[in-house]
Amino acid sequence: MFFANLKRKVHCSPPKFKKVKRYKSFTLKQSGWKLDENNRTITINGQRYKYFQSRRVHGKIKTVTIKRDSLGDIYVYLVTDAKNFEVEARTGQSVGFDFGLKKFLTASDGKDVTSPLFFANNAKLIAKASRELSRKRKGSNNKKRARLNLARVYKKMTNRRHNFHFKSARRLCLEYDTICIENLNVKGMQRLWGRKISDLGFSDFVKILKYEASKFGTVVIEVDRYFASSRLCHCCGEKNPQMKDLRIRQWKCPKCGAMHDRDRNAVINILQEGLGQRPRQETESDFTFIRSIG
Ligand SMILES: [Zn+2]
Image (cartoon, rainbow, N blue to C red; front, side, top):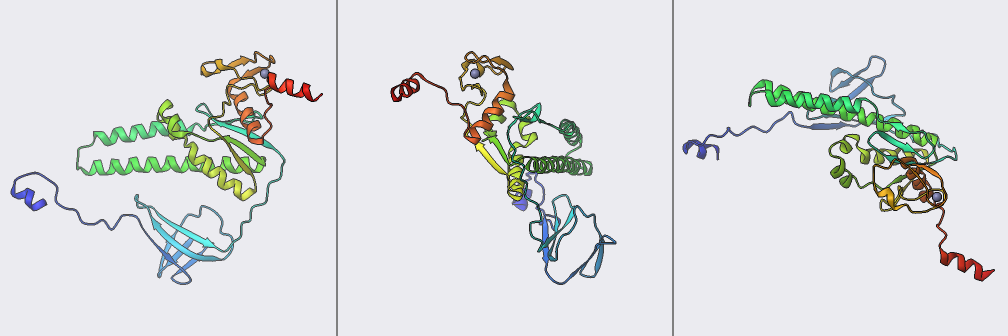
């Protein structure tokens, strides 16, 4: 194709060789490696390398996998025979959570989890790195370097978010036995609020939460997303159609007179729905039914 274009004097770049530097990995079993935990070095095929240990090694090492990602960073994965060494959490506490933009999690018991500040800072860093990338001349080495830099910023952000998710999930699973959340419609939320939702990575967090929960014996209950959590009074079950208006933050139940904070009331509903304890609204037919028995 390249030579045909050259003949016709059509400009196009020459064909590229297959890149050897792309993602690669290999796994070693019993031999070929030696780990020195004290000196933080690993010997692979006679060559010694220094490494940074992200966590302590438990048990006997079964396999060693070396991976290189697209940025050229090299990772060593150790698979050991250690059993799940987590202790089971038994606190008897249940909680309902809702995801939000200002607050990462609104909790039914008031112990909310705020979004870390670095979420916002990361967005600024990304904007800066991509601005720099677009300024560089096409095909130049500076462009290449800027592209790599942007990829690195993205990776750093992902790692930090991942870390925050794991730490929060772990802490919540230790604190609660049952966690009720709303079954998310992330696609719909993305359309409403733009990029921010994907920044917070709620669906990633739910996955991590479920994973951590399985280790600690915590139950995660997902409540159907069509359930009208923000429109119902959690005290009496009265439905308030006015709550479709998202601007209303505080409201008074027209039936029982309870004062509600929009978000707090919604999570209490999620908790009650998840545990199957939501108060049923007494209707006229229910009342006649009871009377006829008496
Ligand atoms: Zn009420």
